[in-house]
Image (cartoon, rainbow, N blue to C red; front, side, top):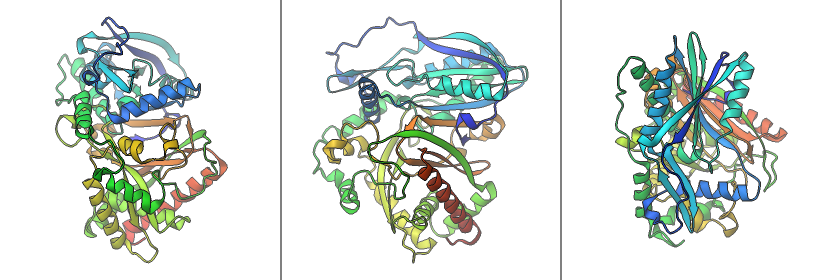
Length: 469
């Protein structure tokens, strides 16, 4: 699986069909007197929904989506594909949920699986690859965190196969949910097309996960709580709750720009294996070596001798949540030295020590730390206050269904309408190591992104070949 803008993917022309999720349950507003504990949202969800609602009230929405697509080969059984989509939304509780702002928090209410149905619509033939790209990008943008359903689904059907696609709001998905959905849809389709019932691993309840998260942290209410000690030290050492991106991207504070989106390969598959071996020989893991390389590349481009950033950490663990769609991510601070006189083994050890410390504090939700520690003017912002230093790495080869990613040409598509920063997601797949960047599309940011990408590529290639920066 590769993470790439759908606007940069070649998809063959075909007949566009959509399946829209509908509910047969009687619907109505959730009464404001309803007990909150019956409809748990995670801290991430509550913050995301509240921000979206505030943006709508200000008539300044920020559109975004997380989408996926893959290929089916051979003649397509349209009924089996529709059944696979229905199976997906009945299987994953979070896709059936509705959300509503109540006094003090956000309530989540899941629809019953048996109440979910699909309405199929044939939209006709799209006769060019450009037309398919434009259609998909436009359709993905229909996703609205304040409107149900929170997933759109469909396919581009051809005589010799199909491109299957879906898009969600971040409210119900994270980086690993996309390969989970691809695996589930492809597996269910193959089963239904063969007249069988899909056989997939057990899933967990995202609402149960959210309830447990709330219960663990219900007494985390003050800024001097010992559990926030790591965050307080991070702020004291760096001077801010949100670590600034250390390079100039030509964006003034408080401004948002149309977002650019680019995906580039840093290493081929053989080079990644060499780099992984170099990291192992030095006593670390690949992601640690990559994080160290990012810090060194930033320093080479004019950044500081100490890397300070935030990074997502999965909360799925093993068990049913490993196969469950949802937003199972905490965001944590990390800092380590990348001084010019330190060789790779020393930087790797710095990263390993910093990450070990991070894990000691991983149960502290990012949103709670934000609420309790960030300056008061940051508590109601609808976007990060400035360009923030952010590191993310995923190995899609370890995700459910990864053994079929190449054959299915599996893709993840992340899009943000506007940005004030430069965020990038490093990801490994069968064909190598890639970097997908979403950035404020200013001339300075384009130059900075190009220079940083080139420096990072040289850095990781040098490491893979020689074990040195």
